[in-house]
Length: 102
Length: 261
Image (tube, rainbow over all chains, first blue to last red; front, side, top):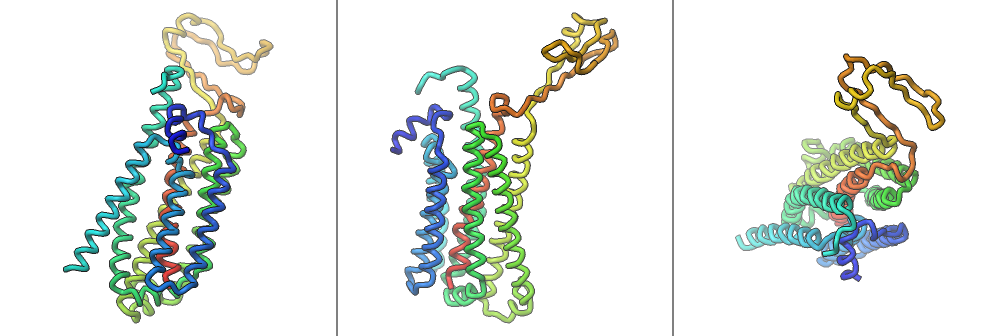
């Protein structure tokens, strides 16, 4: 499916996305929001942050791929997003290494 | 690479990709701006886990959840408005943009009440109650004000951008034709009139005498899809990208501030 999307990128006018797809994505986002609120009530100890951030990351990927059309853009766009996110993650990891092993 | 269907279609296509790429590059700078703050948050949180946990109980999860739903729904409506504009359904575009703007305003109103209640209780930078709290709780609330404040400014900017788009999409499409000196020399001495298809005079432009150097003629089309201003699509797409980014940032702010308790 992904392959299909990227090869049809040449002709932008052709890949019309149905309103139904958007509504499904929105429904999933609402479900994930409910999930993250419900999970916050459960005492997960150290796992709580991991779970909350995983849900937030999943929601963001849905917004990026569908609402922000990344799925239908040339591969360059997805590559750039990955590079920026990895760069940000590197900053965070390096800073934590500094704090923890100072 | 496929052969371009026509030269103009290809030119339009590459222009659109370039415009979007530019918007994405801007969004990356925004991401790193907020990224720095998320970094600050995670370090202080790792150092003051318990205080962050206590401070977060002061925040109203209900308002936070309502605001999350408002922004998620506004992302949906802005995505639909773009798709509708691509399909030429101007009325759906306008309706969806209005709903998006209303949801953005709802978000800001909730934020106003939330902040007012905190400030009223003395929880604001330099406020009596905040100063009596532990270092960790102080850090939590200072980060809360800076991060949700900066995010709120982005919502306001987004609302401004979407309001301009609402105006651009609602405006009747038109264009301007300029009759220059050369063209006018062919009709010099004549009286210029605007007539309808039956030859009935609608308006009188006047005598083109030797003093007239050039004439601008402005057209306004009826609101039909074929005359729609195509440049609005890419403008609305880029505005939508900005709005979605604001939504994504909130997707992270919400659990980190409201759900850590």
